[in-house]
Amino acid sequence: MNEQTNFGSTPGNIANNGYAAMREGWIYYRNGGDGSSFYKMRTDGSGNAKLCGDAPAFINVSGEWLIYSNCSDGRKLYKLRMDGGGAGIKLNDDISGFVSLVGEWAYYCNGSDGFKLYKMRLCGSGRTKLNDDCCGYANVSGEWLMYSNYGDDYKLYKIGLDGGGRVKLNDDMSAHINAAGEWVYYCNWNDGKRLYRIRPDGSGKAKLSDDGCTHINADNDWIYYCNESDGGKLYKMRPDGSGKVKLSDEHAEYINIAGEWIYFCGADGTGGGLHRMR
Image (tube, rainbow, N blue to C red; front, side, top):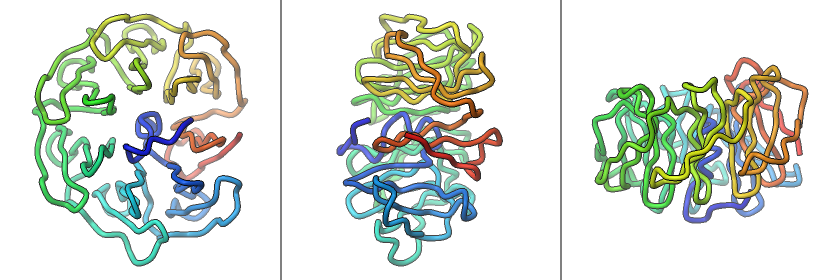
């Protein structure tokens, strides 16, 4: 998966709790072997080092900073220097989920305000509510935020990064939303959690697989997913649904991609049992 230099992480990782992120040869990750503390290592596995004792989620990289939801402090938004110098700095008092960065702005679902979408500058200023929907699985696609509208039976919506242009895109119960290239992928709970895709304008909707899918992580080459039709094991397929391959016999959740590595959680889904494989 290619790094996204204009963004803090990839949409696929953010859709999967953002337990790992990569930038310039380094992987920043949540280490389940040390109390879910914040670590970094080089992409070849060397240079493994603890950054701080915070348990991070929705890890993003911006300049010299790591932006993350601090699970050790009620999922409030924090930033930390990439070298780990000093303690993390709190940016807000909101329960901050599905955190995505675009330029100097962080976008997140605010659990302290009914999971409405908010944005805030990375310095902590400019905190703004963008909508009044109860939102989950928020994902950035170009100039849009895609999200599952819990207040409208989990249907897929989009809204501009400025809070304008709110549009409903489908009538499906849409979970594990993942924007990649010209498509938005999601699990359709109205159709047995089958994997679907749709364009950001609402056209081209198609079912890609008859597997029951969760925890999608897609890029332009592959879609990685947990196959509930095969005990939650890790699979991949091409963006058109072809080329399905099983990658592991382990039950997997919360798939994160960093360089040539796949990170995933065990059955408890807490990040405490984070595994990796090529």
